[in-house]
Length: 298
Image 1 (cartoon, rainbow, N blue to C red):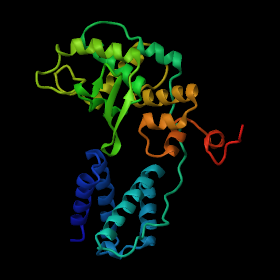
Image 2: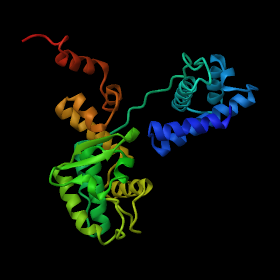
Image 3: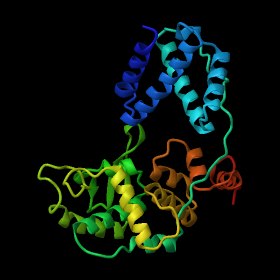
Image 4: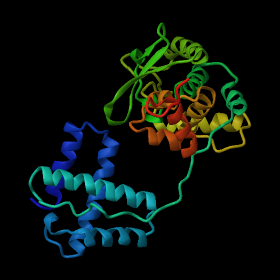
């Protein structure tokens, strides 16, 4: 058991012990199968036979194939996690990926729509079930900063209209409660009245397609793009842009980095720092103002 068998065991560990999403597990499998192909091509007959030089060569081979620095970093991260698992299972006794780094790539900060253009985008015209659905989708994306998968996974019972909150399942199957704004609540209430005209009788999904079943992420992307063009928005508009605009506008008004981190469902504050265009100087200023061992006494 030293080829795909260990990869299969590892993927089951991710699925059932760590409860990672199917897409994440699929990405892990793809990355590890690339590593296995490299191992076999290099004539290495076992996982325990790999050392750090092999992984540097693997990184270089990925680069020569045209993979981006970010993709190579993801592959090496998958390898590190895989070898930690092999050590835990006592199949190997060393971690050869430690100290191996991918080529550095340029950091790209995601854009956002300013408040005026976002307001124009959300004022979509028309009536009917599909328009009411699209209006509710756009309002909820911006109101609560949801990821696309979080939005499409929502069921009818996940929105609490009386409490003005929505329960979402984020990365790693972690649940969080996020507030829903007044405009989004109004749009959701109108969609709730129209939903019965589209949804199949036993469909639990909050948002459905014109076939009556759960709407797909690709369909949401298409509808977002449709309304952006119709509303004359001169930017590349996609679902994740709503999430970044949500975070940027909220941070500009509140300066509460920790609060924005909670609302976004980020495990690490460093992710929120990059996501919201914060530089280190700003982060250090927040630290100086708030940490008990850093802030000045009045």
